Image (cartoon, rainbow, N blue to C red; front, side, top):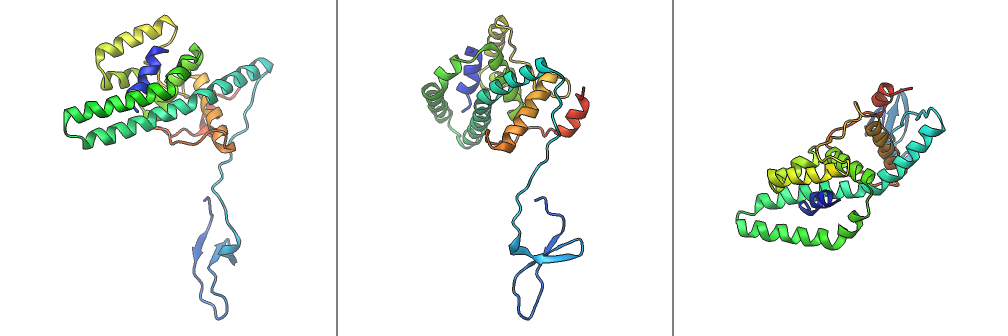
Length: 220
């Protein structure tokens, strides 16, 4: 998990119609026109709702696999979200820092924050959870963990961290690709359902994935 620690260590409605104001002698409310019908706009408040496809699980073994993957994904996603936030914050801040000394000082501040708040938690991840985290970091940032370490530290460090990860049957170079990996498809399904029920806090991913299209690709 040392390699994963360094990744975080270094970076910190659907409304069918149109709302129109309608002049009236006695009513000042705005109106909502829907397929030829008219109702007062302030009588309806709709939030955007996404209808997800029904998940089809073949058998009890597949169901058990999904539930285990769900538990692990829910556990590690917040760290991938944090990684994306830290990278964005780091890039924005460093862009505004002209002095090399100030840049190093800021990097040390991020380092201490990560150490104090997350180091011990990251050490408790299993190998499977660690690999899911690596994939989710790519999902959120658009870059593999290997490339992030390479750009934020050096090619040499990225090489050695990846070699260390390989000893534990992990790879920092593995991307998140639900089109070619069934496990990644299930992870994407889990994430979108957890976003919808409010268990996980939504954060826009680097690439947008259509779960209907993915479910067609992976249907039994």
